[in-house]
Image 1: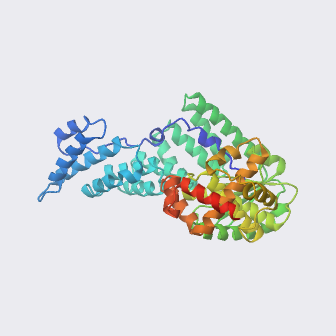
Image 2 (image 1 turned 45 degrees about the horizontal axis):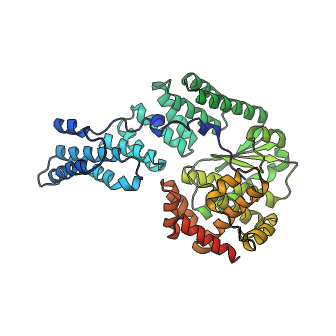
Image 3 (image 1 turned 30 degrees about the vertical axis):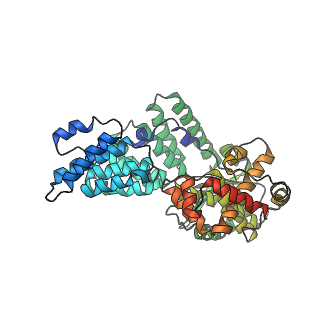
Amino acid sequence: MKKLISILIMVLATCSLQAQIQLFRQPLPTATPELQQQIYLFKTPGDELDRQIEDLRDSAYAIGATQAQKIDLAAFLIQKIMLRIDLTYEENEDLMLEAARLAPDDIIVETFWGDLLYYKGNYEKALEHFEYVHGRKPDDMQITGKIGLAAVQMMDYEKAIEYLERAVNSFPDSFFILFYLGKSNYELHNFDEAISWWERALDATREEAQKAALNEAINRAREQMASTDGSSSVEDSRFVVHFAGDSRDDIGDITFEVLNEVFFQVTRSLSFYPDVKINVIFYLTEDYYKVSRDWSAGSAQGIKIMVPLKSGYKSEEYVKGLLAHEFTHTIIHLRTNNRCPLWLNEGIAQYQEFAAAYGSPDDMRPDYLSIVENEFVDGGKVVKLNRVPAMLNSSSRKDVMRGYIGSYLATRCLADYYGERAFDTILSSLGEGKTIDEAMVDATGRDMDHFQSHFEDWVRKL
């Protein structure tokens, strides 16, 4: 059901990515001192900078060109990227590739390349560049910290802790390192450690908004500790399952059987296999609503799935559907670095839920049927997908229901016309930092406006 908005991420809402990870801190210097004076005169991209770059290209690509001439050109190319930093990665990629060819294996160029990818949300590729630099400069704690922060964004929290704990020794007052150490431990259910790091982060910031959010996060961690006090846990190669109180008596015997069925169904459909273990926490009902603060059948936050045990489960099929829904959210977060639009995120989650619970993604929930027939098909009230976030946050139960139904139907439309491979293409493109319009074009040849029209025509023919 509707995903919780984590207070841990809201702490950073007003802070730039540069502040979080200290991006672009070391521009590539020119090899020619006179050019180093000139490069900083360019404050905006334009014809004058382009003419300078073309003059440098003539020299850098001439027969007998020196490495110094190539470095000079690479420095100006990187300066141009910096001046166009608000463009998409793809719009700057040719410049970046050219700079890398001119200065192969250069530590500064590789670091800048990783910074650019991180800034644009492609954390997996950024990590490759950071790890290359780390191999060359293992004692550079800035790079060590960047690896840790990229790992956080990819939800590889064990790796994040390993690198951030090294970095924090060199930067003991870094708010963001302390914050993310707390978050990583929280996600791994290490609540004592999370509280300890967040208390240190409190001392490292003077921002009242950050302090308020951290205090709230610390309270949440303490509530989680209280709710799971005396809990038991078991794990296999894919999941760590926690049972609060005596909740294991309700579902323990079927947990891994169901989770493994769900795992293979969802990962095959979305062509993505996580390389981290997923935490699944079963709560007693009253405890769940203390820690989730969300009246839902379950919730997914990062690599953690939280499920209330309401007075036992209706059936094994219900369990499969619920876990498939929340596990799908987790896979989408991992696959897209949390960049998936809400309508698609909820749509794919329901698509997988119904496949698990009813045997087919086309067999929707019984309470959806009359609404689809009376309002969507006969009434022509097809949901505008860009309105889904507002609908799912509405105080009107009817609006919320229509938002979920619209998301599900749009996802079915995608699968009907383009196959489930469209999910893979869209999620992959989003994970690379592309917009939903660009991702939709990659998968369907249509941007969102065209797909909306296509979707409305499809619904009328149901």
